[in-house]
Length: 291
Image (cartoon, rainbow, N blue to C red; front, side, top):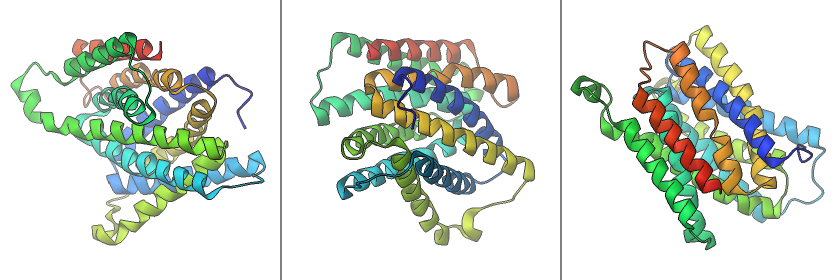
């Protein structure tokens, strides 16, 4: 559907859309339960995926192996990765969760080397080191009160979310080798993740939906629609381009998220110079990894 655009441009458009979606989600997460946010977002993104697939015109051949890889992509990304990211927004704040998610640029090369047998160059190693230093600047807090407010182990949640997304990128590449359709992949992956989220409902007290507020619901739906478009652009960039280039470019949403976080949530989000410096260093490392 979007194959006429350059993959790097697709990644940049995806970064912009995802940044706007993350801010809307941050507003919603504080007013709805994490489970409710994940459930409703899954419904919107799955429906949008099938709508995009319908616009694309369908496929003549659908190998089962490709479908299974897309289901795995949905488990790692839309289910585990998204749920953990939503949880981390409440635990660490939007800006810090977003910066910690940059560790996907550590996990993805590691999986590429270990699973695909790719070579680790000096440039990639230095870029990875820059990302690690940026993460250290992020988690360092200057006051004991701040450390008590956000315990260090809370940062493991967005880091684990990043690992799940790295697994989704890997399985997505395998899937596109069988079925080269980003719309179909988005539809299958998000339907699978939605089914997994819904399977958790019996184990949630009162379905885990918590209290409802129309402002939070409106923000969530708006964010879900924007994110659905961002997901399509992102997977199109992964399908057409090199992972080492499009993944870092898609992470340009980081600086926009930090700015919007400070602008809209100043009382909740204290973005210090260390947070900004850590984000910039992680972003510089991303460009080094992209080579």
